Image (cartoon, rainbow, N blue to C red; front, side, top):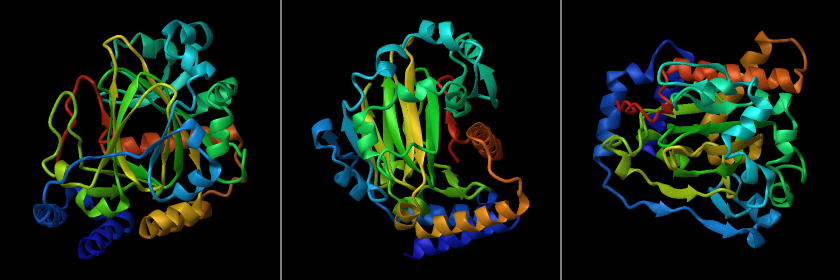
Length: 341
């Protein structure tokens, strides 16, 4: 509890003053002492169930409490059958612009540029594509995904986000307020999860928007060793296969790495839902910071209701701002080592 209180005080200063937690020798020293007191602990498997056990009641009980894998929920979906073929994308959507990251930049690129980038680009959180091309939404939905969706039964997500890349691409440890029902479409993706109680030990930072957070924690990955405290964190792991669905509760820290052959695409679709109850249950402190930040932003922007496309573009702009704020800290690329603090 002491570590959590002290960390939250540092986070408050980082959010509302000119203090920078990532640049603070005091917090670095506090963090070093906190992780030094912890022993290494084993990695635990993430709970998983089959499609037949994926009832709505069970899913609703888990929201805000623990991640869960539903194996094979989308195996027969059109997306799983077709999206792993680059030609399928090029014939239909080559001129569509999508949000990408590279080892040095974040911005919009045409899908033709992504496929011609010699695996330097990673489509990471592209949202507007699904508003331009709503038929893509239907390709990642079925009876199971609608059954386990949070909120009112059958209600659509706030956003769909495309993640498409290559072997060893991924992200370092981060978290967000939204509830995510993630669909694995092509390739394999390794995930690690850390409960909100691990916040003091991941070396955290809340982004300026208050809706998401990053950290100095880098996982062990195919091209390098992670931070020294990684094995001291309470953590769960799983590897998603095409057709699997993953429920990610609010504020659970997580990181990912693509696993595939050298020429194979790895594709996933995140669907974001708002659930104040689940967010508060998971992490009251971060949720309250988000509320304060949201109220401040509403006072600054009184432009009325946004269309779904405008909202998607605004969301992509926030993602870009987040990544620029921490100098690509969130992105782990196949041809560069993730920088540990």
